[in-house]
Image: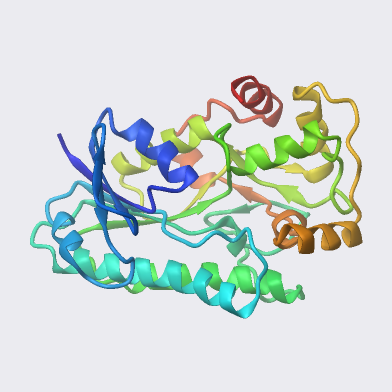
Length: 312
């Protein structure tokens, strides 16, 4: 059985992916926690910053998937900013070094980045061939930080000297899964409590991907000869107002209290998070996946939300 090294596999999305991949591959999860074996998942310790015994597992592996990164669901103070940036850049750099040192390097390296790398826009979606990267437009400092992190993340991937390994930057949208702790779970709790109304002016786009399609897209990219940046998102992003309306409809909740910008700012302080996560327009389109022949099972949010609510 071929081996996949999954770094960052203990997070909500990582565990989702590990559950699905373990039937086809031997999955080795790199973790800062204790080494252990759970079922047919092997957990190997690493610090996500320096070479160690874990690096020998890269040699001969079929693929590496790196999802490592400190959560961005926090206040962007100096300490958290440093940890967010370093956790992404350091883990990407050191995996690149391990692959470069391998006598039999993996065929493919799928590296998580983020769809937030694109500009804040409403007029047209950012595809992965011609999309406008953010940074040139005026934006709040917290928004600019997120764009800068995504750019540094991808620059580290690009700089890795791994000529025999195909590299893919996964510009992922929000992965919608009913697992507790994920973004869907947080939004669903808001909807059920009557707080799932329009956020801000409701015009900002939400890009998303159903968990079934996320896993299928990862498996597709493991096998297809695609490299460079790839948008992992549904082909049908929605403005926030419509997204939340359909969410309430799927949840059979008739009312959702709208939140103005200032209300969201106050709430973000109490919840120790940032409004950038809901107010920046993430308007992305998976052009490269579609052109390569990938088929989405849940392209429409209405059907996706109904499925996710039923499974939650």
